[in-house]
Image (cartoon, rainbow, N blue to C red):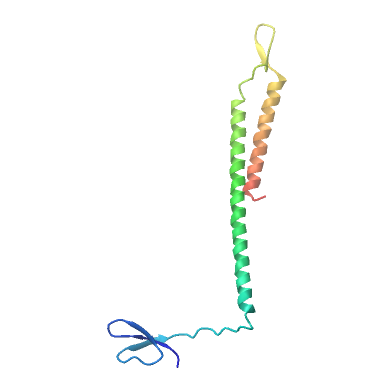
Length: 135
């Protein structure tokens, strides 16, 4: 006989394989699947598949984390490059040369430093874009 679920008038649930007097039947209980000791391969394969999926999910999570770290590092590098460019507008000592008439002019070293700062900003922006694109 298949076990069944019964509900008594006072709301109690009873599981039994014989009818319960005064209770109404509300359903059958599905039997548990039979285990085949010889054919455990399907269960083992399912367990291996689940474990592999878990490892893949953990790997994706780790990759996402490391990609987020790369993005944050690239953002910090870009911010530093922009700050260096902004703060580097003022000539450093030795980047001015005196001219006739008492004035001064900026040296080639000043302009080279400005170009280097601009290249650093452009490179940092490219690295940030690549990190955001997952490359």
